[in-house]
Image (cartoon, rainbow, N blue to C red; front, side):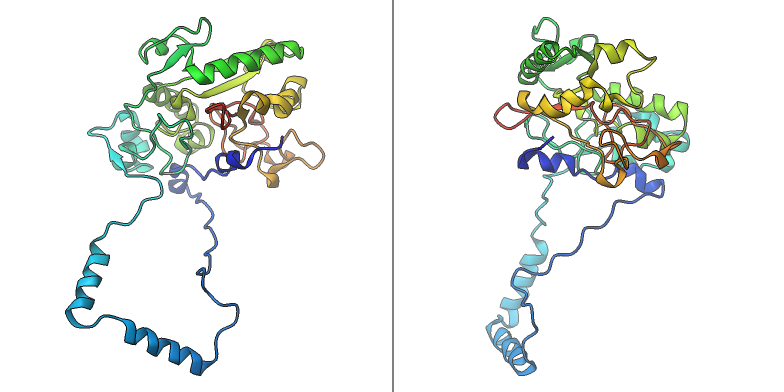
Length: 323
């Protein structure tokens, strides 16, 4: 698949905030030199002259102190937007027992993302969080395409209207290609994600769950634009759709090649370092035994993952949706 330039930021997401508490930290980005830095240092005399000129241009006395105070008082510009803090912890189970050792209470209250923006970036980074009370207001069910409230969507499969229309086109194209689609999961509320994540914790432990499932507020499903999509054949041929190998099937390969034509892109492709030596649709075999993924695949899926064919993240048709 050849993603558009606008899709790239959604493929370059960072590690889950909880992984730092589990002994796994995100790599540090290299520091960029100042834009006006010269390739070669100027001669010593020229450098001293430049410093003298700069000193002469600086304000003195009270003016200098006032300028310094204004610079100190000015709030730093936040590239992720202003942080919002909920009055209470909505997923209280994560603040109890052994799990409270991995998350500060503020981690369960803070949010940065405006989910109504069809280009909103929700991911596993600390700043990629939606508020507990956020829910789209323009959702429809994906069967009859009738308007549904967030409460209705706890029992119906729903998407935002624009994403649902694009999904309808995608499913029609899959049927014409001989690979009828199967929708496993669509919109999921904050509280539903809380239950989902806790289910993974009960099967293993917090750190393993954090590698397989998104924390509440960090799931793209809460946006109402994300689909866990497979094929009907894949659904009928195994106990669970979340198993190794879908990316190597006819349907999986078709999605890689054609999903973008209907406005969808893959938000979590296999990391280049994890690609199999001979196959491009599965990770390396030396990841056997590591944790798999759930509704939103991590940046580096393991050998048990469904190869990130899931998580069709929808956006405005003029931009792109996402696989």
